Length: 409
Image (cartoon, rainbow, N blue to C red; front, side, top):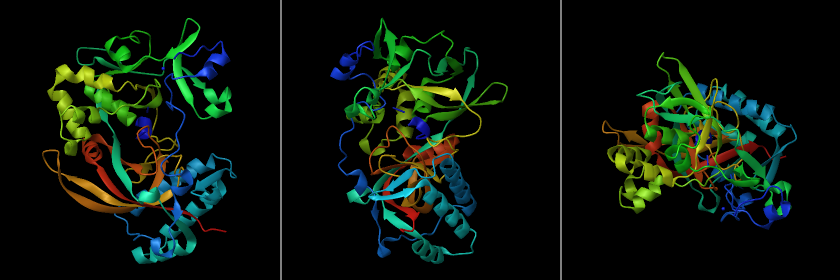
């Protein structure tokens, strides 16, 4: 979305002239600029762990949730070409190989094995890869599905709209015009025969340029909560009659994502060591006069669609609490099985961490996110509601990740 696509992320381009498009563009883009070479080469993001690199494979969550998550990755692979390549660093497998491996893993989970026996079986049946690139570490954060109250009609208590994808929003793949621009996509709108940047957060929320055009899905109560709904990428909206409207990321305005946490830390509004979603929300709600300027700093804007089931990650499969993670698909294979070791917050009654507990568990890469870039970032899905929001909001710890691939042939 995170998560969940939430985690969703200028001369003008004349559509009537390919020459002008190719001459240079800085229009809002899903990839704002041509991707630069990573500090860690993609093929070095994952390296074979060797016999001594296998971690302890104890697991702190119910095995049933692991089986559920594995089956979701199998659902994803079932939609792909069986021969589609799946890259683990410098090594190449296929979708068919990944399906066979995950089925083997499910069979292993049905065996009455303890941690050491599972470790021995995994070493015998699969190939382990160490993630994290040269640093051998990943910074883990968290995301969740908010539960908010809203209405399908505006009212005194419901004044903040969330929008579906506008019909005048245009997406353009510049790779269709020049090979060197492959992978760069821009977002904009027509204005007098020209493609210009799509409306910013300020233009949409403050100037109301989408108001009354029929794009409203629902009206919610609080602009800060709606802003963080954009960040998370999906949520549940409880309507006045008690029914639930589930909304999910449908697209963005193409503007660059800019984190307000860095802004507030830079201004001295919150201490760097306390930067968290909890601290950001607290500051915004205690300083309503500053809200608009702070929120507008992040020009990226998210549009939603109503869905059944979910929440869904970028693979189109529903996420499993504590088991689904988001990682950069440029560095790590989608749908893959991995094992993480890190720390998570133990939240006190005041909403702050009392301590940090170590977790060790299997996870599946089932999502991606605009802020989850490079080989050293991972985002754990914590579930829905306020408790999950606190866990996700404070989660910010380094750890290790090991991926598993079919036994090398």
